[in-house]
Structure formats: structure tokens, C-alpha cells
Length: 253
Image (cartoon, rainbow, N blue to C red; front, side, top):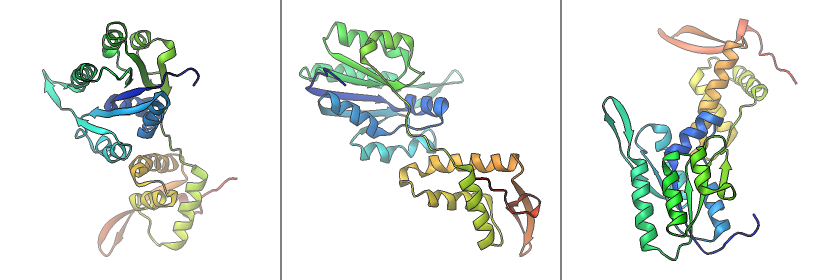
């Protein structure tokens, strides 16, 4: 990036918003180091905070070690059911912390706000116009609200797409064929877990990878390459997977 102001930088990440936006839009997940790398381009990072209800489900809970490894302070916010609908308090906490931070740190000229939520447009406008701060908005490509982009200005909006893992179906077929040669019985979950181990991905990305592999294996079943069969083993029913029709998996390429 050219002509970037250097100085002190603070970064506030609406991680829950980005996590679900990225998953829904690209079937990908955020890389916390992306935010750190962006912030470093603007100057010295004075604070880095990531917000969300990290107890909501196991997938976002598993993001906590990744965030801490990237030097983020993890701020857990609560979700409550109000009138039969879930209400998140993440936005309120971020806004509160932003205003406290800018009053207590008047020497920090650049604030990076990572979110796509249009509710922050007024906050961004105020920080820029009333407080003279430069605000950089970082969000998921195609998911940043128009109002938020207008408040930040086109030169201060950065779009990201995250980390995406795509399963190579032909490699997966070869792997399953090899497993069939080695083992008498293959179960769906254990085969998926074994393929995760084969990928040698870092531990923090394996849950995400596992979900993609399960989807790919279901696709092989839907397309007729694999079939699920229930057998009796030691008088216990066992669901196994095998090449459809008892034949070797078709492998192309």
C-alpha cells in the first residue's frame, strides 16, 4: 500500500460477525494473522482485541487459541434470548471500548475496525469527523454494508476472503482406496479423521478441514462412488463405507 500513515494503531475485531460472514459467503474461516499483518502496515500495534460469544458453539470456541496465538485479547460477549430472538451484546461492547479507548489514548491516530456490520457506520463517522482519527474498515468481501463503506471512505476499506480449504476429490478417492486395501472395515468418521491427519494442517485448522472432508465424502456417496453398509461385527451392528458395488473406486487423472 502506498502513502500509508505510520504511527500507533489499535485494532478491534468483530470476530463473530466476520467468522459467520466468511463461512456463509466463502465456506472459509478468518486467519487472525491477516488482521495483524494489515495493522502492521499502518504502524505500531498498541492494542488488538477480538470480540464475540465464544461459548455459542464449538466452532467459534475453537477460534480462541488462534486469536491468542496472534496476540489478540479475547473479549467474550454474551448472547441472550429476548422476546424469543437471540440478541448479541457484541456491538455494544465494541462501541463502549472504542469510545473509552479513544479518550484514554489520544496519541493513537489510526483505528482498524474489522466488521461488516452497518450498525457501526455512525461510530466510524464520529471517530473520523469529530475525533480526527483515521478509521480503516476491514471486512469480508461482498459482506460489508454500504453505509459502513461510505462512512469509512473507499480508500479506507479493505476486503478479505479468509482461509479456504478445498478437498481434492481424486486424492480423497485414492486415499480411501488405499485404506480399503489395508483395513477390512472402514467407518465414515474414522476415515475422515485419518484423511485430516494426512493433510498435516496446523491443529487449529483441523476442525474446519474435517467438516469439508465430511461434505466431500457425502458427495462421493451421493454420486455413487461410495456406499454405506450396515454389517454385524461381534454381534454388534456397524456402519461401514466401501466402494460402491463392491468394486474399486473409480479414479480419474
